[in-house]
Image (cartoon, rainbow, N blue to C red; front, side):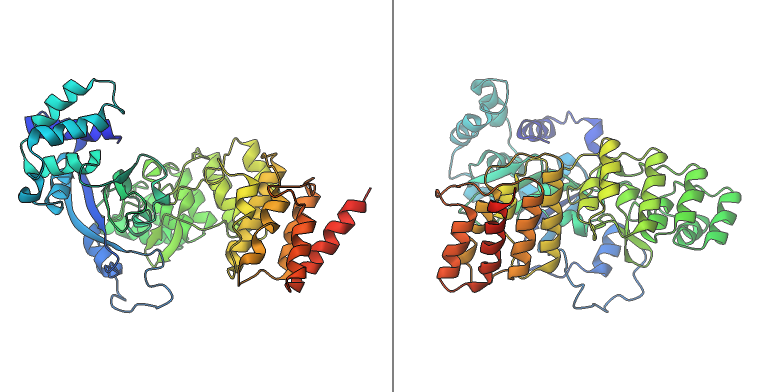
Length: 459
């Protein structure tokens, strides 16, 4: 929802004229809380109404809060309107709200609102003055920046530094609103997320869900007995999610043949093609990459059955983005995806120059992904200016450097795709920048100097 829609919700809540499509669901209200790091598997099961995990309390330190669960759950509401009221209860109290009288804050909010809606300022003043409930007044002030400067996100929520990770911890949840402190202000953010449809499996449905994870004989028996292949568990995942997460092509094929929906939960960033094994019996909606030929065979069968090739997961990535992140780089599969109309959301507005100017020092996997992304952008003809200079012009200022082999590898990749060493931002070539670092004692740049010198004399 944009600001206009949320302000309308406040007005509608005040009048009692509620829109049916904004009621009857489940909406989680959360706030950023750096000290709140305890939203574990048991909490998640309780939140979704699922059976407690058998290993509750046994936390692997390597897995603990991998996605940075620094948030506190304010509550869950059955409508957007009640979720906004819950949010208002966490904002400044009535005494603080009356520091500006009603006309003053309505005027100030309308000054902001008039820039983003078609209606004029006077109409917005009248609307906002009509809000009497202190909770809703405080939310209106939050949205309009009266309580403090906030960035109000309407897309790419996953990039928010405070609450962008929440959807990785609440499988299938999608943002309704996200207000995040604007720089230089810090560590304040609030969000409302719509939770996905979920089921309460009966014993037959639960047996089908278990069988989908790898027991092909039991799965075929359940399907033959008429089990619903599109049943949902408490986390909002269908048997197809379980089969994909377990990487069992035969189970995926059997479910698709029986009518399983390859687009199930896609609107919540939780399409089956993104399922990965998280804990036993609980698929995770954010696979990090494509894991080999067996995984590819599953993905092709899903696409052939009608899965949306450009569906987006909870991390804001498409199937093409996951392919690009795979190891080794799957050139043939990337080309086939492009032929089918696949697009990258992660790299949609990325230039090679900006990508290579921020090298991930000390993180081998991140460096491998960056190399793949550079390769993809250059192969598909993405625009660039002076990527060699962008990479080498400032890299030597860091204490932790990439090895000479990695630097030469990236230089080779760019040269192989037609990038030439031309003077960049500071009027230097990349070779001259690399020589400067050598002269300052960073001798591992010598390989880069030599490689670029060879490129200059090549025919």
